[in-house]
Length: 180
Image (cartoon, rainbow, N blue to C red; front, side, top):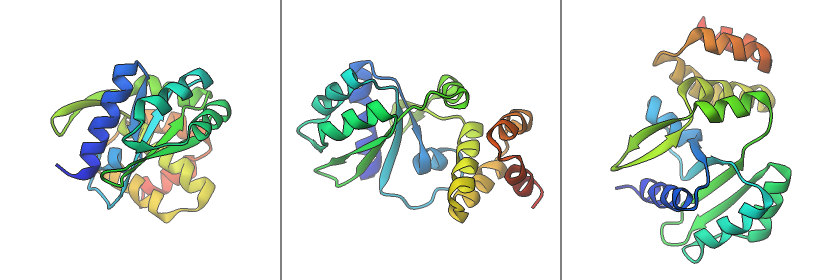
């Protein structure tokens, strides 16, 4: 088992034991749906309030380097904090779920899948495509567009994508990838 999968399994077990809702996203979710690319981090969207931030810091001690004040700030600002697994040197990025219509819908649509001998919640393929398009629009990242193209090539719910792409302002990017 790769170090990333071992750390993911451990992080998921800790979150589930504490009753913290999460979903896998980013490049590890991409690897579930389409040909993977190299990565050394794990991206988890979490539902977390300031009270839960302290609990997360305690949950991951002493096996991870995690600053409690970073978790608290991310919970307050709906931002990002990270934890570094000290044994494997694998970083886990915790993205506190935003409270807009798309992010609420995305989180409720997450699905439970088998991953290397355990089960985890993961973003749906369509919502991952949309997230990558939003990221590409905001950053100009060709890597995000390449990921979205790979996900689209594996098949996706076109009607759902068109509906949300329009609302998210990425319909032009979606159309470009779908036709080229």
